[in-house]
Length: 520
Image: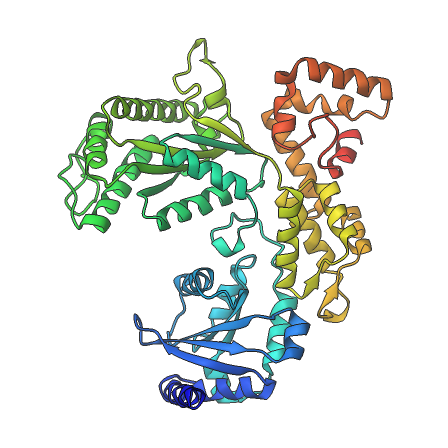
């Protein structure tokens, strides 16, 4: 009887879905023709234009595409799909039922432009878009199986150069996330430093979202695109928004109007610290401030004009004073998590012969490349989204040896290998030879060129240490031994080589593909 009742409820919801949703009947026909079985139709309580459909794929399709769990579909009757809609799908998968596949979803929508929106977000959750208008006009000309295959061979999820913003696309770094949680819970400030494209901003994004989901008061500012006054005002404006979102109101300030807009005549440098104190008093707990590109505030190393870099440095020094004073008074202050390449702003005690007041302000955390198991998880998960398999342990060993777990370099090599897939084969078991050939390619946008860029970036920031590499990796055993003995006796002179994952603890290459660049 229970089974009969459930079938009746399913039939009722399915019929309602087909009545209310443009292309709903045609979509169900598309599923039937592949042998897929929708077993739940759920009307979204928050938005009547949305329906959630839970689908079981036939076994042969599960095997081909490695989609053994159930697939989530969102039907969104929007004329235009915004990025927020894709975030809603990702959030539901991340927080939803364990039996749902976390790496694939379907979006049914009348917006023909949704496909391009998804394509621009490659590297994040792969979503198959189905145009409901096209289904009605053309019928089921392309099967669902063909559509899944098409998205897998045309969307290169390895070819991603922008920082990750979606938690579903963030891999590894579990130890680093735990350390940042531990520090923030205790009011400590942390600076994250590492190689170019090593994942600093992605880690910042992940922890920021993670802490906001826990209900912490969180603000994010990118220092590289802001003047000092913009930074000061931006901090006040975002605090004001937080207060209005949590309590519905905010205290009266000198620099902002009641609705949180900058006051046109007030002097920012005179009043910003007092206004910040007022806002911090009103916030429900310690503010957590995430700052990217923090090294832009270090004069002489910044891309900003020297006067602007000095002004930002003074601003950060004032911020430290606020934090220390409030801590002494027993008040909630600010926990800062910042990121950059060069930690000099917190490492060097002197600046132009004067005390550097930000010296040891934050606890330094160096983001070396990924551990092997984390790199493997990234490679296999992204490959799965493209119908690729990395089952041969030799392929993982090769990637880790040559690129040392550096996320960008690893993905670039996998992207190059994927471009050699024969005749859009799915699944394609990536052979070791495809990766070896990818490493030998010359020219721009190749794994070798990216390795060269990472090495150049390190040399730009730490020239003296980079100059040691030809000796540390020399083919002359005596020269190599002497250099490594010197490095061991003067560890501070070559500290960033190890901390940033250029070498291992014994000064041997961690990113072996970099050795040829150094010794050529």
